[in-house]
Length: 113
Length: 113
Image 1 (tube, rainbow over the protein chains, first blue to last red):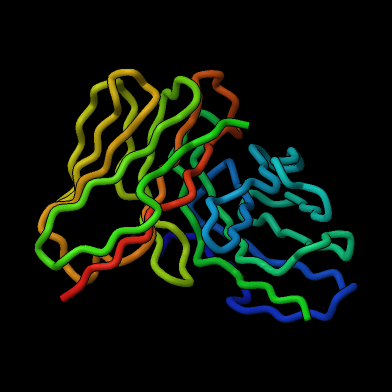
Image 2 (cartoon, each protein chain N blue to C red):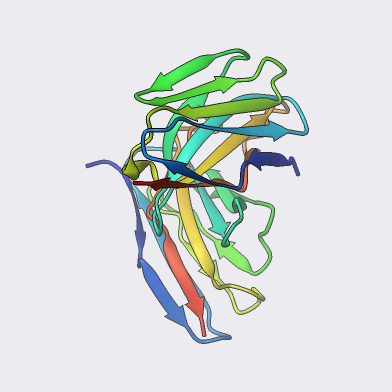
C-alpha cells in the first residue's frame, strides 16, 4: 500500500532533550512538509522540501531542523531550543511544487515533560 | 502570512441534517482544498477546487470555489455519525509560492443521534 508513515505515534521526552520524528513516504512524491498542530488551531508550516538535499523554512522553523537525504524520508528534529515543543506533528507530501494536493501521515504526538 | 477565516468554529447538529461551513481569505486564492481530520489522526483530503465558480461533489459532500476567489464553501448533506470530526479548509494564494498552502483553524462538527 502506498502512503505516508510517521513514527512513533506517541513520544515523550524530558525537557532539554532533542528528539527526532520520522516521516517516510512511498508515493514517489517530490515534495514533503512538516506541520505543527496545537489544539483549536490550524496547521502551521515548520519546514518543507521540494527536492532531495534541499529544504526551506516555513512560518515557525525556530527550534526545529530537518534533512532530506532521500526522496522517501524527511525526518524532523525538535531541538532543546524549541520553547514549547509539546504538540501534534504532521508530515505531508505532494507530487511536486506545482501540485497543491498534500497528503498527510497519521501524525506524532510529542509530549515534553 | 495569508489569513483564512473559517466558520463556524463548531457545530452541533442532529443526524440527518445538512451542514454548511465556509472559509474566507484576505487575498485571491487559486486553489481551495477541504480536509477532514478524525481525533488523533492526520487530515484526509476530501475535495480540491481549482477554478472560480467550480462546484465539486464527493458523495454527500459538495464544495464550491467562490466567484470572488476569496472564499469557499463545504456542504454535507444528510449527516451521519461518522461525519464527526474537524473540517479544515486550505488554500493557495495566487502568488504561486510553493509553500503557501494556508490552513483555516477548522470547524468541529458533532452529530447528535
